[in-house]
Each structure stands twice: as structure tokens, then as C-alpha cells.
Length: 343
Image (cartoon, rainbow, N blue to C red; front, side):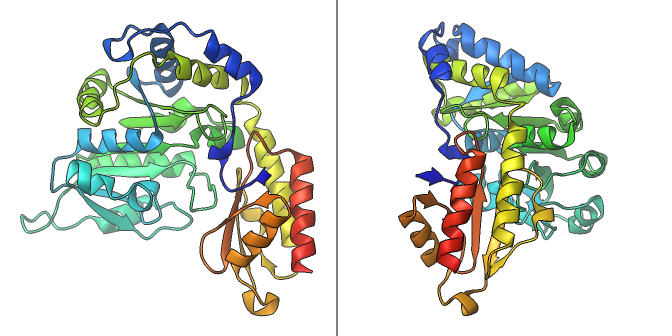
């Protein structure tokens, strides 16, 4: 099966498995696991922060940040399609008691002017914002990359209003690969930021959340509360370290394959897709269902019968994501399968 459903479908390589098998381990929650400690130090330096912690998932990193920066009843501002707003099972409300204020941006991004317009009156009847969140790259924005100027402008305005800033960096390193801008520069104006290892980097599990030392100390309390403290976690941290050493530069291959896929799909009858919108490894496209006589769900089922998995989002929209386990030859096979179905 050529799996284009998500970049979380990657599997650890043989060399990564070997590094994991040989990892030195200890009690992670007692800071006695040398491999986890090395990973946290590495990520803190990569992002230009004082400290970092290792968590089982990126969603937990988001939840830790929100619960650390906010009090119950506070308001968190983010773009309406942000992962924290639509894909974390209501975690901000359940875990931190906060309200989400969705900004109607474009392709998962918003401007400083849109942020300014979203602020409510400073009145006791209104919920007051405490945190501004951005997602780099923007998943439901088609893997779109926030410009550094736009990020900095949003963060500067938030800080002027006394708010904290948080970056969901699930695919931050994809943005770095696409632009050549460092993770440290992207993260510079944000009070907390995390990166994921289980997507394009190909590790089986884990993410690291970084910020000031005081922030990480408080976030550890929330991590403990949520059951995120681990034991001999160096086994999985070793996979993340291997990914940082060997799988970052190759993200550019995923981007090239996504472009190849987009151009191939755009040439097919009944597909609505502008390849110019594909900036990283995510390809969204729509089907002319009236012309084709079937919807996105049926198209997905037919593709699966040809050995290609892809994710329908609604009756007309699908998402394809390239990653470590998808080659250029796989992309060509997927396009050929789609062509036979759409013909």
C-alpha cells in the first residue's frame, strides 16, 4: 500500500531501529535517562530556548502549553482551522478550561491586523485573551508556510497586549526545509514552541516542547498530571535523535514529491488543484463530483483497491501527504492509478 493519508504513517528505518535498540536509558521523570536528556538539550538549542521536555505526542505539547500559560475562563486565539481548535478532542476546554477564539484567516494563517480586530473589549463581561497560537506549517492550510515577517508581527502585537505566544511546530522543520530559515529564527518571538518527530522525520513517537526554564518546570507539573511522565523513554528518544541527525535535510525530497504529485493530479479530468499552492508536503485537491459521478469517499475507496491510500476530508475534498516512505516512483504509481479511475 502506498500510503498518502498522512506523514504520521512513516515507519522507523532499520538504522533508526538499531539506534533505538542500543539506546542508553534511565528513569525519564527523574531526569536519569541520558538519551532523553540529550534530546531535550538538543531541541532547546535548536529552537533557541532555555529548556525542553519530551512528550509522547505533539497534541500533548499543545495541551501542556495551554494549561501552563492560561487560567480557566481565559481565551486562546488561533486560526479557525488550527489543530488545537479542531483535532484535539476539545482538550483546551477539558484540560485547561479555556475558550477558543477562532480567527478567520486564509490557508491557516492570520495577520497582525486580523489579530488586532479579534480582541474583545477590556470589560469584565468578556473573556480575556491570554495566549495566541500559530501552526507552522498550517496543516489544513495545505501545508502553507507562515512568513517570518508575518509571524514576528503577530507575536509582537500579542506581546504588546501582554499575551503569551505559542507555536504548534508539528511541521516546523518542513517550513525550514522549504525556506532555508532556521527553526531558531522562526521560534525567536514565541514563548513556547514544539517540534514533532513522528511525522516527516520518521520516528515512531514523540515531540519536544521548549521554552524558558520556568515555563518547562511548570509544564512538567501538567505533564505529570496528564500521565505523561515516562520511564525508560530513551528507547524512543533515540529514534528522535537519529531523525534529527539523518532525516531533516531529506524533507526537501518530500516537498519535491508533493509538487510532482500535484502537477500529476492537476492534469487529470475532474481534479481541481493549483500546484502553485503546494509549498511543502501536503496536497489538497477537490473533485468535480457532478462530472465524475462519484464523490471523494468513493474515489478514495477505488484508489485503495489500486493499492493507494488517500484521505477524504468531505464529499469533494481530499488530502495527500508525502513522507519518508513515499518515493517519486510511488507518486507516479499513485497518479497513474488516479488517472485510470478518473478516466
